Amino acid sequence: MLPDSNRRTICMMMTGAVLSLPAASLAAPATGATQTLPPGVHRLTLPRTNGAPVHYAISIPADYAPGKAVPLVLALHFGVGQGSADGAGNDVLEILVGPGLAELGAIIVAPDSVKGNWSTPENEKAVNELLDTVLAHYSIDTKRIVVTGYSMGGAGSWSFGEKFPQRFSAAIPIAGTPPQSAAGWKLPVLAIHSRNDQVAPFAPTEARIAQLQQAGVNAKLILLSGITHYQTDRFQEPLRQAVPWLHDVWK
Image 1: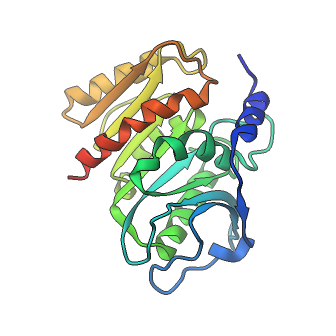
Image 2: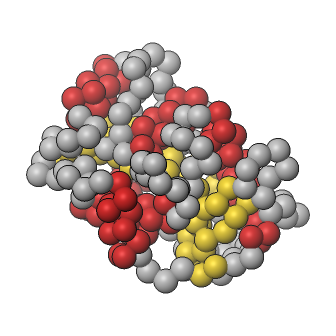
């Protein structure tokens, strides 16, 4: 089992070239939805008046054109232990979410945690402000916004889907612990989890999906075997299965 720091190193070694643009590139809402960045992956910073700046990565699909609404994916990164979260959003985008959801043709935004796990008030406020900024700058189909994430980000996907269901059309938690209760959950959810996860046991996810199905929620589980928690890149192929599922959800 690799410690978080080693996992971050492996992820960073596997990432592609990243284009860095000025921090203020998405600092203020534009008039109407217009493209402000070329296709590719960019690492940026969103300054905030009442809070710490939000560092994040954003992926613009090759065929994006202003005026043609595309899906938006919020990608939440894994835990970083006692280390810095700087660049962790880019890591999960490059190693997992970007390749896994490439066929979706979506803009993907992957913030770095501001403080602690994704359910903290600081992170909830920061992420919602970032989403508002992206919506102000790009042509986004607001009926096709998805939250996903891995490990801590998987738990964060459950949390954001539970607390802010009005923002999303679906949640795709990967190797993440679900909330204690399924009460009130309405959002379509596709969970991806391995039986061999030694950090986040699969049993709670399996039980939660079963409860949601019994409650009539569109809930699906992709249950894997032979993949341990830190083999992040091996979840790419299972995540690709979310693309046709999402298209069905959006019909």
